[in-house]
Length: 331
Length: 173
Image (cartoon, rainbow over all chains, first blue to last red; front, side):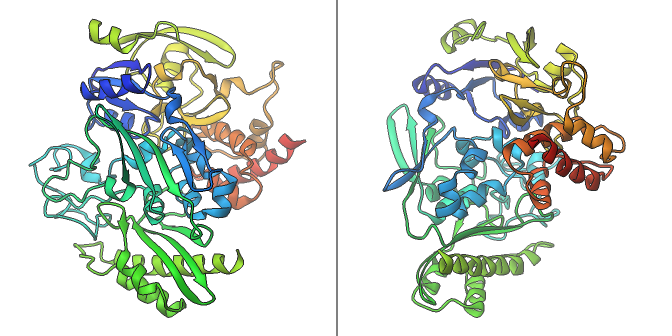
């Protein structure tokens, strides 16, 4: 591992200045330190932000929005009783990710910015990777692509966005507050991540000197009838082969409002708006849930050995819809 | 924080590769001079001589290095040693009673033959104690879910789950 300086930021302004100078921020460290050991991240300066109280506010008591400070830990948020009751998709997206040890360490801001698990990205030399080394090519597209994306790829990259929490957040139209040298701004979580296009190494719309301060989720009636369904190679502690965050507002058997987002299948968190429009105003049953799943995976482009994840994705969406529907009936 | 440089000091001094840190482990303070790259796991093993926490994958995937910081279980391989200053660190060496009696979780692992080679066992036990304290050991399914971050390549899982179920009852009592 390359040598680096380690310092603790005195305040948020200090952290922003350090970022402008090329430092990397250290929160939970579960992504950054891991990638440093793999020599994929090679920062010269590390600025520890773990003690900055401005980033720690976690408040689910508000009448208009839920507030998650960027340094809130995954395990604490997953265990919040209000979220478990009123926004199960958010809680589930957190406790179905990683292990309890990692959830105790990992911050929500870091979770949003976690980097892909593409084995060619993590594997290093001799494999080409446009994320790791822009312009070098992509070994995954012609390689073992069982876990590669089916939606949102380019000829330059097919790496999956690996997170779960962001999938639930985009279903609820969550926003992130950012701070940089020019002050604060707010964007939707959906605007945060980019498709790879010609520049797979640029993964987000965050400026190089901007910090995520907090995440805000508007209070909504859609929360209770929601779920995050994650399908993996094993039952626990694995990244998604396919996942879906679904939220519903039902009027009897009819869908009044619907949110559908996909994880594990695309190069970025993937909101399926066409699927939502198809669902709204109609009945929800096994058949329409299946139809919605098919709509959500429309345009999915398989490679050599990942085509099975199209059917898996369709069934994941369909099952999530039926689970959310059941929750809507009992709440 | 003693001996921790501020950002402006670091920028004026440039490379500050070694750090003086004091780690509080099992109730005792240890003053160390460590390279910034040193993980908490290596600080415990190589610098303090507590080799109970094991290095398996060194990437946060196997759980063999699990320790507690302020009562919460973490993987010590993904924590910088310098970051751990200020926290109360507990390792497998620190969970028994002062008279040498085993922790109920240690005894339960023996009673249920919850290991074969034993390499993952310190991490399993540290994780299991936290699992019970968190309230995640009320059913076998819960135990399996919340212990999924600790891998056992000998496959002693049946014994491990039984040991945790047993110890959970004793730890309440």
